[in-house]
Amino acid sequence: MKRFITFFSAILLVGFVFAQDHPVIYSTNISESNVDLEVTDPVVLGQIDFDATTSGVALVRFEGKCISSEGDLIGLAASNSTTIEVDEKNVSLEAVSTDVNNTCFSHSMLYDVSAGSNTFYALAKNAAEVAGDGKASIYGTFTVKFFPNGITYASVVNQPIKNSLLEVEDGIKVKLDSLTISPLIAGKVVLSYSGTLLGAVGKRVMMAASDSVVGLQNENQVSMQNVSDDLNRRSFSFTRTFDVSPGEKKFYAITKVTGSDVTKISVYGSMVAEFYPETDLTPRAVQQGIQKQNLDVTETEAFDSVVINAPVPGKVYLRFDGYGYISVGDRIILAASDNIDWGTNDGAVSIEALNNDIIYVPFCHSRVYDVDAGEHKFYAVSQNYVETDGNHKVSAYANLTAEYFPDSVSFKEPLTGNSLQAKNKIIMYPNPATTKLTIDFTGITETVNSFEILDITGKTMEISNLVSENMNTISIDISKYPNGMYMFRIYTNKDVVSGKFIKN
Image (cartoon, rainbow, N blue to C red; front, side, top):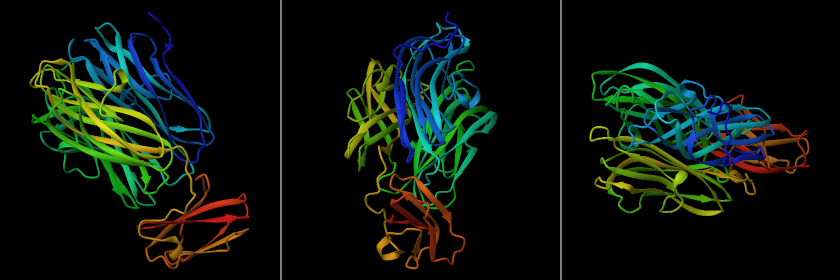
């Protein structure tokens, strides 16, 4: 038995150096078969390295499927070290039986990043319960989204979820925790919630992340069931998008249990809110809710699709997560894909029902695609494959989410809000300017909250809240700015007005 961290020759070690003017995403696919996990130290399945020229935060996520033997408890983690820690810093799972041994998982963490070299790991280990053969096949996607400090148009907030032996009454919604964001402008929030549920054996447990505690139905929640006192854990994943206005916005992690008067559950995970503004050349997100009942998937079928219009080349992070219920004897393939098909290993996940009572099964599959400028369509697909003794049908309640990350942020044209035109609302002088720039926004009738100056790469040079609601001009000292073109943005309570000026 090996007593050291094992690096497989097939592991892709990804190294990056990138400009810190906008959020970026990098990924590696994980495809490891029959890995010996009954070792002293966690096994490194994947690794992403990058050199950051500025500090920031990194959203690190590892998700996919694990095929293991009955009797083993497998821990998986996305981490900034080669150690798997407890509670929300890992997810754990078990094969339900010798036959039903495919389990989906998703684990996310948010880490502070310093300027310089940074490394993140996708980890796995068999621990605590080792009655099986100690081996597992793990297929998935390992991603890092880096949000550099100094940008204000995009942000990310994380709330760890740690609830041990929480008493939950039948049918009563319970708020497990919350987080708050305060965007300066209108945009979209991608809210995700993933982790591990323990307890509530045989009961239907619903998990959700939302801006309220109402409406835990269909694709607005993810349902699951645990099998027994021993097989008492499930990994889950839920994603939902929200349109938001400027100002404070609160979101909640929620649970509800049905089928018992009072039961105890433990939940460990993370709720993450990513904010992206409504602008042309910054990251953006689209989502399609999926409600499909009794879809025959004898052949590959598409549940639904989303479209991304990319103004410049970039990457799309595609995620298909939720839950399904299926008949006993069927193995149902589920995948997020750029075509109406799916691939083997890390190209799909699969779910199975143990019996007629344990039928709610959570799932998550993600991929990262390189895209050129133009329109791109992505699909949530499914097929009954290999094990086909059931009725070949699936009912799925899920969300297909696509997040677009441009390779570069360009401000070739002034960005304007949907309803405001900068040229009619703002007077700016002198332009070009040498030492001082004055912006008169008397023509803006909406409440003006703040302003921002950015260089041509998108790096924030200056940002400030207005000291008085009665202010209608601002004078900015630009004497220390390098010569070149710059952007300004005026944030109102409804929109953003932008323009450009030259410093010489």
